Length: 166
Image (cartoon, rainbow, N blue to C red):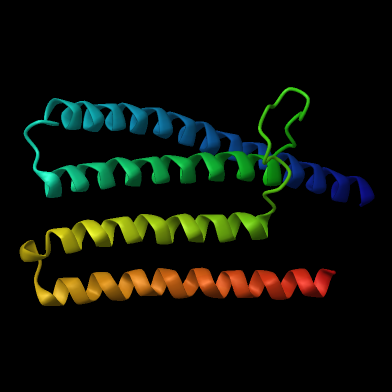
């Protein structure tokens, strides 16, 4: 019976390597997103003398938004792999934040990134306010506030948990 238990434990523990497929998929998604970013950047660069101030601000906010999304993808890939699959060999990896992203801090960073992305999107909406109905503006604001409240609550819970551990 003990050998069956050991076999089940090995299978369950080894199943974490299935996550590698997801992380490699995120690597491919990040590469595709980089191509999309380059296209957006080229479009902005070609229209630098055509865009007025408002259009240029919207274009820059779009590029900033893309950078934040790409950073979020990278953060999830690295922290998820290290937390759930295997540790990076720090001698070979030249990434200073490895080992500092436990699941709690990862949740806070992801929530903060989502709030930042939502803020930029909401700013883009408000710069084009004439294109939106009052109802849509209200819902977009409520959704953003829900993200903010969630991030604050996650930070508060993480602070409580760290005090309980320490």
